[in-house]
Length: 62
Image 1 (cartoon, rainbow, N blue to C red):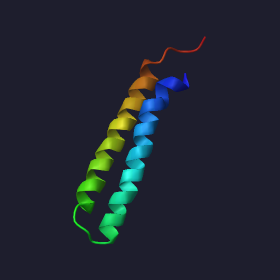
Image 2 (image 1 turned 60 degrees about the vertical axis):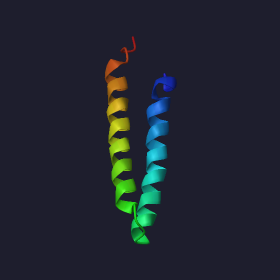
Image 3 (image 1 turned 135 degrees about the vertical axis):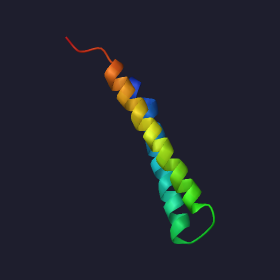
């Protein structure tokens, strides 16, 4: 059952790493920090929605 959750979790973890990179860019006041942070938030939302869809579609255990 874990195999169903693998790709959304990997996507969420990678977007979390990207979010930290965007936060560092924003702290250092380098260009592109807000764009990176915003896009990683959208990727996190997409991965959470994907995970919820997998949870809803999974067959109940008997």
